[in-house]
Length: 460
Image 1 (cartoon, rainbow, N blue to C red):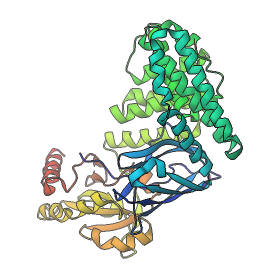
Image 2: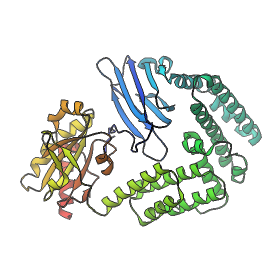
Image 3: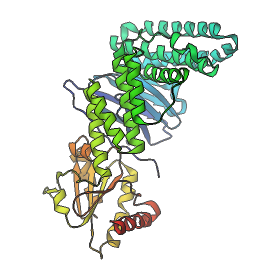
């Protein structure tokens, strides 16, 4: 299956005090027509990916509503910056030359001091001295020497961060300290593991030096704590069961033994539970684990996300009724799911800015005509667009039984579990889930999807 263009969605959960994060910029001497941006609001919910196409003047623009610090990746061709901490209210302008991406990378505007810090960190510790790579030549000198070099490197990196402290927020400063600590601790943990020193893993790290809430938020420190617990599990000879209930029990045990704080425990448990739903779908164990987690956890965002995800996957897995909806068609008339009763319904989710979507739409008439004689299929095109964007491309969706539009952050998309475009769903004659893993219409000029749908129809 080809790489999916990703739907421009705002946060899955509303917040009381959200502010916009704004990112604009210009690419000099462009070699690609788009940037790919990944936004990480936390480490449980799925990251949000965005394709930002350059306009006629090679400029791009992006906005997202934030209620807390987040992390951002920017990728342009083979170049990019990863896991940059961003904050609500930032308003950044980037001027970048594609021929010399890193040397020309010039941020300006509110919040740009953080980006200048990252550039300084890169030049001092990754480009000129390659300090982190030089660490490996000390591995053979034993844990004390290698550990001493790591402490020295941590001190140097924190000293650079201190130089920027007056120009960045205290929240950024503390979170970035946690990232640095987590990265350095991960190096030493990897050393202990590779040298069969598992008996030393819990005695060589002070997990209480980083505030528990920062451990939950920090990318690097959270990753380190997860690795540390896996090493601890191996050191005490715990059988590594793969069941989701076993994962839940162990992580809760780690909290009750005071090995980790509650915020990071909730993060790690929620991440495990979400991953299990992705891999295994609905199971009785997953529902039990999430119910137990709901009694243990205090993080309402994680709880809401997991319960919503469980309900959606459970409903699809059991063939239950798809959520009802009311949308407007291209004539401004309201329609709902019940209007399609009596025929199977193929729902197509697309967007005006999504090139693979527009290609798929050209093959939908083939699908429609093939099933036309049987008179057992309706096609519903849903554009995930602003009213302005939809108005410019509305004709591209008119080859369906009906076309409409949904707002990018609508409850309708959340209810249907739509995170990417293009996406396709089949609903049966009675309005129940039928299939959510469909071949793209453009694959094999529509023949692949027709064959798949015929098989599904013959079995139901």
